[in-house]
Length: 435
Ligand code: ADE
Image 1 (spheres, rainbow, N blue to C red):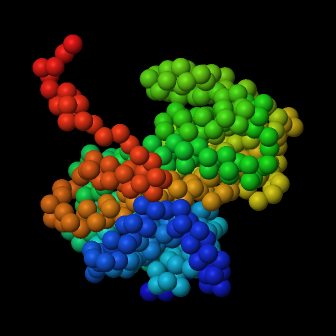
Image 2: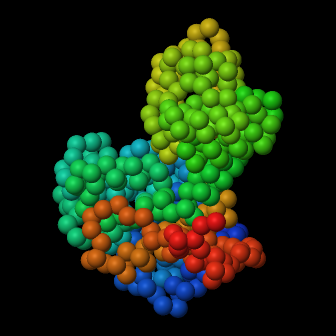
Image 3: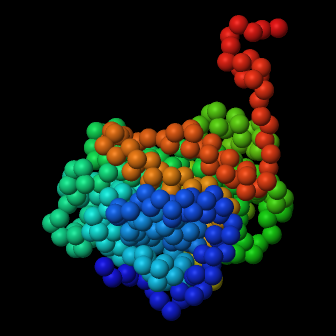
């Protein structure tokens, strides 16, 4: 099948970038080496919907080394690195992705992946898996209508997909909701629930890459500013730590009482968005929820407040409300739009409210994606090894795989860890031993 990308001539640059990422992804390299020898994915078609970055390039190479045929669509209209897409096409991957694609092209690209009749789906945010289900259950929706232009009347047969993987919190929430309604058509591995994924990718990956995006877009000084972080899950925690490290005053907005208390004892000022709106110089959303910052909040903001989103979808900052409130709008530079309110105050929205770390920067560093994508590759292997043994549920990867990924990473970092003595192991096992 033909690929649809921006410019095939960018392939040499893309190859160099993938090579750069690969050098910092020792876990994935080890898996690639094993896959190359045993070819466990031979004969399987993998349909993927991921951010098309240099790190994804290394993952796709790993899957191909295992013998899989890979079809790849973007998981966000603004996150594709066009040179990487070109390099992957040159290596035989079927890619449907380019930076700046329209909503229609975005769903058509995912539908092209569905048309390849994948045995395994690999998703980031759930759009591929959900579209497969919407087509199967004849659900209404603009995504379905667009997809039908590509797949026609064809729909996936029950059992034809043997399993799927999901990368992110938002996607896992959507797939668990499908499972709760008894509608999940095949087993899915929630890669996001591996500790070697969320403790590093969500926290340190998003923590750093969100600021990378904000700084590339604005080049503002963070020190001395008030940064409002909405959401105190692993992503919000990571952003708050980095904001503090850069010298910001950090305000956390969080509806979960336990997480809010944690933020308080982590030393942050905790309040609701109603108050935070008037305090912040920079706002970063990381909640997975919709309308977190909306009209009533924009009305209270300082002149020149900056708005950025680090959550998967572009729904956390209500762009609709901003458009309606604003008297005028102009583009300052790539990824920075100025909205002027009727009283003259200016608000700056980054990347149209889309993921700032992938739209304005290059996503998480390769070192953390190494573990996230190590989980992805091993999840595919797990699905194949356990074919016909898994139910149509959302699963975590076994702890042993999590430990193996951590051990491989530690080995690559030349970090030694403590070994328990037999006496210590026995002490931990027994309820008899006290003081
Ligand atoms: N998600 C966040 N960062 C990413 C990256 N560098 N590559 C792929 N997916 C990502």
